[in-house]
Length: 266
Image 1 (cartoon, one colour):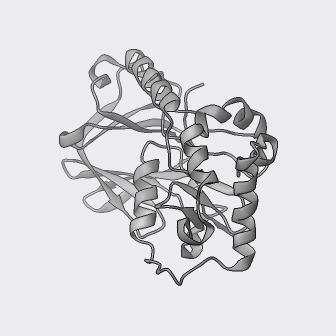
Image 2: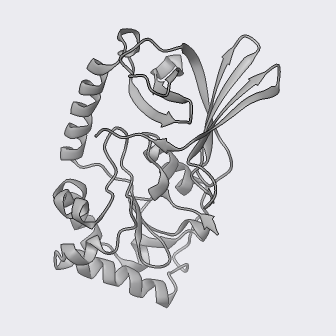
């Protein structure tokens, strides 16, 4: 069984991946309308938003619903209802309610059904699997979380443009930040360490590489004849971990660690 869906993404590249999903998707003409069975699913979703039936909407979400790091994911119906106005604000709700089934919704291969250019994604069973939208309230909260996180980091790590991910393996904590024009930065600690402590290793000038059209991607960091590769597995089997840490020496793989989880703030 394949594990597919943007709801698996727990890092700040969520929006970037959603853009990739759309730009690599086929272009639909006016004659390409949703099949009747999928029109019914979309109409049910639109009807739920039209009547502000939050209970019904909460049952249509596939959990966890990922948000841009460091915003915590929405893990269950209770959390969705508590944060409903933050996720589905008036602007997004209006777009959904006023959407045209024939003009605004498209089936995009195995990726699912999207509203507009990927504003919202549904699976073919009618569940919401991704929201590529951030309300003003979410943006303020995310900025507050980033400021708080910066203050808790080791001093030399506090300067960055965007936090990307924090992953945990059996032995390590791996952190990647976006430095803008300076590329990506990699920092690693022993698993039981705090990120306020000095990392065992800091590397800069990393690059991101997308692996196919499913959203899978990895970050490469070079250190002499060593290469540190951090992979994010968006599309994979149920047995696949969320990510991988691999270390190569002169092109020979010398270490592999499964990333068992991507952290979000408590």
